[in-house]
Image (tube, one colour):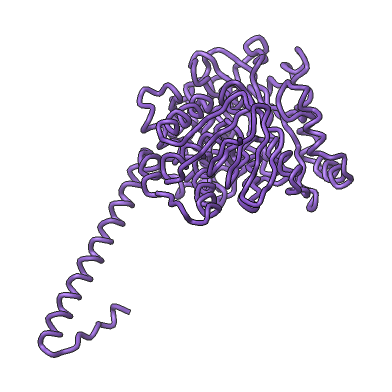
Length: 490
């Protein structure tokens, strides 16, 4: 007989684990299971060597609009608050300064406009605009050897979280397993998901599972499952493999360069490895690959399942790759993985961050890098730079929530609300307790605290005035009179 659950989660990376944590800890859903095909959790894209280990707040990501930054900010603060609460010894993350660097009149002007005119300075109270001297105080290697006549500006913040998303995944699962009715199956590969009158019958290589609701959080494979069930047929994938180069200890924190607004890929940046501050990572590169998992040729067929060799997919790829910004970018990134030649080609990107770096100072990081699938909308023949989520009847497919791990808890919160709805409202989600365990622990800037204090004072004054007015009304009523509000109450 199949194992029966209220909710099945497919995928044991940080997306699936954060949902398991949220549902098990903050709802009264009784039976929840997570299925992971690998023998260990977070073995693919969530592993700390397979991603950029950055917690993206939207403050120094210069290809974000203000609207997207506002959405990402809350997601990052949810995760940062969780880490601050559960990991006081910082075994899962480190925290350092971070900045986005502008060099030259054109870049400086762009960064000034972003900070002062577009509203990013107001949105992020901890973000400061600093010049060459203070940049040099924080990051000496960024200034040393640079043309002294070149104008420099940076937007800097102390919220430079470097996160081991693999350990964070396991932390979520450990917390979830403290609750009754939670099961985790590793080494259990889902082979088929079948819709039934009462929910879903899921076939795995280790037996059958039955559920009322299902969430597929299996990265690129989520779209593959969706299309096998007849959903998301207007979508395709552009899998991008990210690689890194390593150097000795060169930076004290994270240093980003300006990003191209038309590209969904992270700009080249440098930062210390989360578990070894004596190593500096530079990257990522972004090479197109026909696989859904880095270095696993067995997933080439999975890619073609999603690509489908459909005319719409071919035309979409042609339209996207013909862009005069994207095409040169793609071609350059193909070169970076070529031995010796790639290192020489990538060196100028490193020197944009640390001018004094020479060729012998960097080495390609073997065994680092994962696949970041970019969503292609074959109807619009364009890259979709937003969140890729398909919500169908009692099932959700999370393909590549943007920007991935940084917003895992925000996506989990939304999915939990949707799951409760799927289950006919028989269960409830305690969002207040969820926020108390996560975002309420995020350290605020003084400006944030002052704003909150003013808001609390205003609320208290409003309550006091209302109580006074009520008391006056009661007194007038007792005297047989009617209280008349003044015109200032309108």
